[in-house]
Length: 173
Ligand code: MN
Image (cartoon, rainbow, N blue to C red; front, side, top):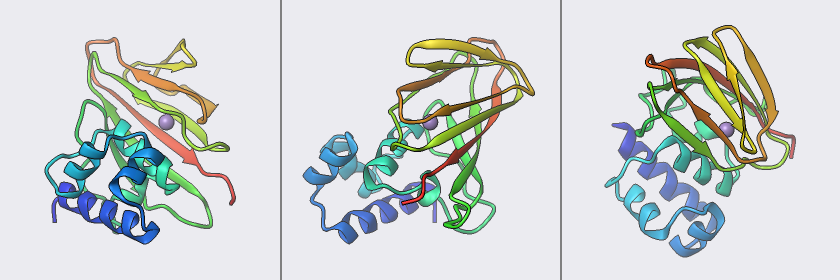
């Protein structure tokens, strides 16, 4: 099954499990009803930013949209690509994502749920992180830890792709 059909199925299951209409799901996630419908019908593959909004709105880890078996499928579409390195574990409560940001790309993330802590470590290339609009540059080997419940953005102003790991820790419920 390709990634678009898998995401379609998972979104439908999540929505049905909560008994949410598309309208209600749109209110919880901040993603338009039209876009949610397209994703559910497998007509559109969400960007990483959209997938994060959906995960946050449904209160599930990001990797819930990927296969539970390793190696996880290919990435979500869009400029930024993210692939889970490990499947989400309920006890450890973190996602570890391998992320690629092409040269010149900017990806803006809506705030994650309160208590989410994100750790970004650059493997290759140069990454700039914007936290509440304040930008800082990270070189290969450098890391940044921040509270994920604020608006944050990732950008690559260099001419080469940037590859980094993002460890997202979810709070106890
Ligand atoms: Mn994030």
